[in-house]
Length: 142
Image (cartoon, rainbow, N blue to C red; front, side, top):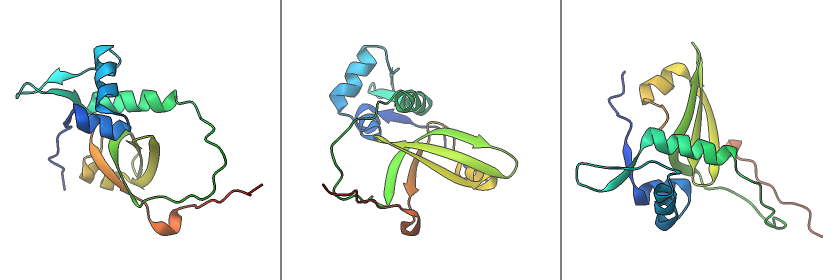
């Protein structure tokens, strides 16, 4: 089965949501030349999916870990909507990375599945985390 999905272009508000920032922040990044945007057929500013994937990957690679204080409890939602930032395939398996706001998710799947889903940098995707594979931590309290 071949995917007919094309790499999309994202409106400014959608691109901002996928990166986990405000619309204004994303507009400032575009104005500063950090992220390329173009006008679509309707004259709206959009970010092409491949450009959004490039920027999300660059941003994730340079992210600084912030100390947020002691974690009291932690869990996660089951579905993360984001943009595919990288796909590495061999003849059998594929590694797919997704940037969903401030989160980087990596999935291993068959190369056939990745191809059928049309996964490539810039494609909108939803990562569903199976609850039996989610690690939940509660650090020691003072």
